Length: 275
Image (cartoon, rainbow, N blue to C red; front, side, top):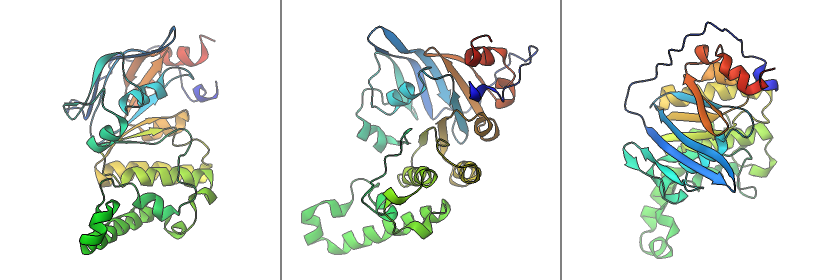
């Protein structure tokens, strides 16, 4: 498989997989999900430390996206628990988990095609006063004030991801890479505790990919957010992530800093099947 070509084998790699000792923002314990007779996620346990970028890698079918779906509430776990900042969230519907502070993107961009780039962002904050017909009549000043604040924030985010010049373009007219940036911008509008990114580099040209990597680092360093991303581009993972988790056959194979993961023979074994 192509993504394994940048992994170097070193049989003397240290087994030391020390992780950040701070209280995790996300704590997953023994979660499981099966489809028919296939155990897609099998007793997965992991911690995601705050204020860093954690990568989730593994061969196709390893269970990565299923794990994201369990965390974000699209699937219900058959066993185990998931805690966000100490609060149990497994079993909650996706919109409640979103309110708790987990925002995510998907493998296929889900932009609102017939709305402008700016409108895509302005719709993200939930519970807006203007959503109530009565309040638009009885509290018009509050509605206008809130809408102005949301618009200002949306423009700041678009400036950050370099989409400001496209703010009035329909989202459907964007390139694949620009749609990835739009999804990233939308996640930032909710001020989440953690952002789950499902293959943010997919379909992004090399030039835009370099910018994307810079944006990811800035989100963590300047905005203090936590990122947990699935990615097949090993260069992106190894050059961007602070911690890497490896899945195989629905289980956690290993985890640790990128410089250790890239030299772990078990990782190459998982990708190439021993070849």
